Amino acid sequence: MILSQKCQYALRAVFELAKRHGQGPTKITDIAKAQAIPTKFLEAILNQMRQAGYLISRRGKAGGYMLAKNPDKMTVADIINVIEGPITIVECAANTPKGICAFDQNCVFLPMWENAKKAIDEIYQKTTFESLVTADKSNSCKKPMYNI
Amino acid sequence: MILSQKCQYALRAVFELAKRHGQGPTKITDIAKAQAIPTKFLEAILNQMRQAGYLISRRGKAGGYMLAKNPDKMTVADIINVIEGPITIVECAANTPKGICAFDQNCVFLPMWENAKKAIDEIYQKTTFESLVTADKSNSCKKPMYNI
DNA sequence: GTAATTCCTATAGATTTTATATACTTTGAA
DNA sequence: TTCAAAGTATATAAAATCTATAGGAATTAC
Image (cartoon, rainbow over all chains, first blue to last red; front, top):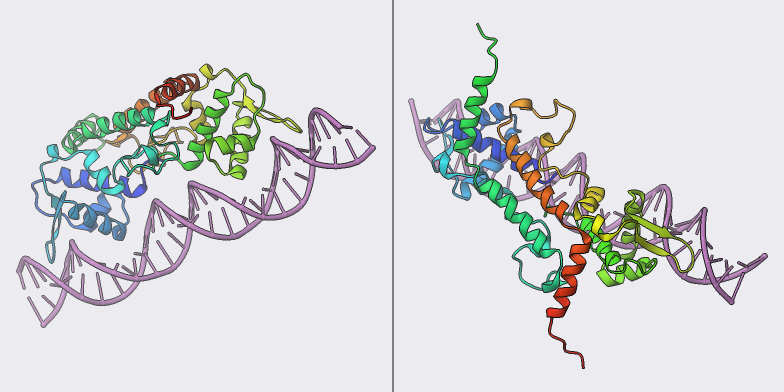
């Protein structure tokens, strides 16, 4: 599996905050409950995203987390980058200091790795959390309503 | 890193065999030396690809491994699939039996995961080992020659 | 001040990855 | 026939990573 569980938790958490954008801070436990994430694990994840500048927190009573930007300015790529670091198909295709790969400049696979990285990056970068919230809303509308 | 070391070894090994296609079997130790792969580890990898039908082995003296098909019929996707299994961005986006994901049918991320998977698959599927060998040849020509 | 909440550090358990060791089987040539 | 080269199979260990939890410190609202 390419994306870690942690990263998926992070995406779902930000998605939850995007849904509640403009409503003040949301408690960790509420996010955890809404998105089925282990609370203590989520704590660390949210903290990490706060330090990266994507979330704002308020401590103490009535504290919690909120987005640092508008949902249309936050992309899936942003969050993945915080949790997993830059997408790396293989080690030597990363922009690491030279000399790590035994084949160095002449690796025949390198162009392919670069293409793959670019293709994924584009998809993640064009997916904003606003678009996800919008998709979610139209999704719930389409669902049959069993309530009376 | 998305691709395991093992998978990269597998790709390099098949690439090495593609370069030697039509020259009879190549010894494991020769492949290992040419591509900087731990010999014993490579043994297991080659065996796995043989069982998947991509390689043919000959035992005994003057034995070794060779491709089971023409290099233009073997793709990077084939080999990755043997070693890593089908590409899976996230668990619930795989074609697993339903009910694994807590969000099931209504996951807002699902279309994105499917797009990403498709984008990568296409790149890997269109890269044949023949094309890699060709690229490698033109690469070596471009290199300055320091030999006398 | 007290209760609620985030923040920080450490660490433990589980899983996966990577690699090696050992012993066995098959093959082909002298 | 005999021997050695080479692949086959199984077990396992070392290392790295992932996932998750625990406990207390700091902060804020009331």
